[in-house]
Amino acid sequence: MHSGFYYHCNVDNIAELMAAADLAIGAGGTATWERCSVGTPSIVIAVADNQKELAEAGALNGLFFSIGELHASSPEKLLHAIQFSLNFPETLQYFSANGLLTVDAKGSNRVINLISPPQITIRSATFEDCDAIYEWRNAQETRRYIFDAEVIPLDTHRKWYCSTLNDSRRILLIGETDNKPVGVLRYDLADYEALVSVYLVPGVQGQGIGSQLLRCGSQWVRENHPHIKFINAEIFRDNIASLRAFESAGYKEHHLMFQEAL
Image 1 (spheres, one colour):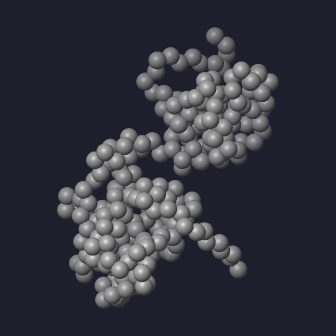
Image 2 (cartoon, helix red, strand yellow):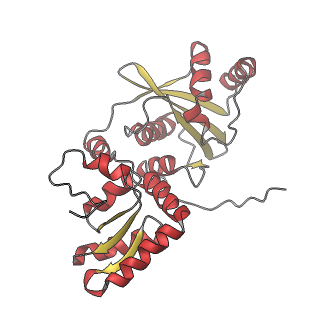
Image 3 (cartoon, helix red, strand yellow):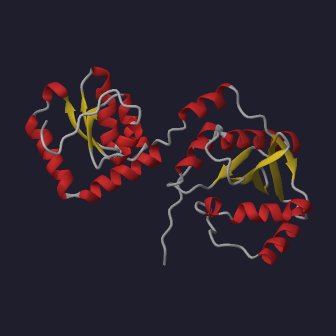
């Protein structure tokens, strides 16, 4: 055995070992996504034909290094990639963060939710929901990706809430599963269009509820406001979870908004 080298075989803590590593060298198969899911930056070699496309696409999207196919690789290529990693650790940090954003290891939950989506009922918000919605909206996981991320004072929220419930151009809905709230939908109406905003009750993220909540909300709008023909949404580009939820719910990218800070 060489000093500093450890050989692990048939271990039951592979995720722990991956997460503890600063850099991995591996093939471009399923383990590629496993490494991304724990934030382990890697150098990928396509050892089979069906791995070539994955290795190329992953490298182009900043998930890892790729040194190409096995037959075209060489020890020199691998050594160069390792040396680059040592000289530019910030690149490894980028790969790690990008991998975690891209692969959240909740794919099995999504498959289950596609086969048997959560049963969500939609109801109109009432005055009794005011303080609960205040807590959900001010939760850190909610404010992370909303446009106005500041904590709202309770008095300000209550004034806004009363105004909202009395505004015929604004719809405030609550989604529930098994009589427990899971999310809030707001629709701002303008002629034949509506602008939607949505956030989940803290603790239910990652269960496929967001996309199903959006689907149920759209159905509610169809039934109660049939004159609405389009529902629009404004989403931060780096809010990967929301982008996935809207895409899964059937939303399509319509146009881009550019902004200059003065």
